[in-house]
Length: 101
Image 1 (cartoon, one colour):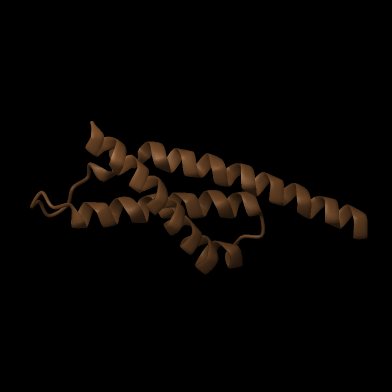
Image 2: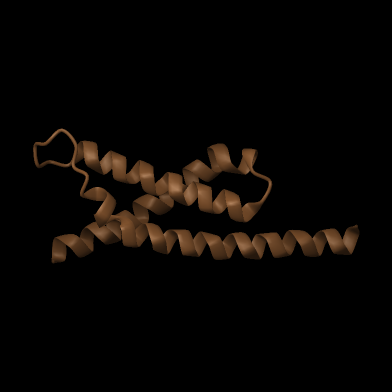
């Protein structure tokens, strides 16, 4: 039980960091809607964290798919947090356009 909670806490940090990398490298430059960019980078961060866990799990198998289940809750939490940030950023962008437009 402690291992599962520690994995989820580490997954939260790992997914958030990978999401930030994906957002900075790709999604900020490709998508013009901040909500779509935040959600896309959260999904990419979740998948890349799960895949890296799958290939580095020390149980001896070639790929451990249990990372997709272990990191599901942290992935959802990061996705919701980034969705709210994207909505606030979109509102801020539309308010600036209304003020100066």
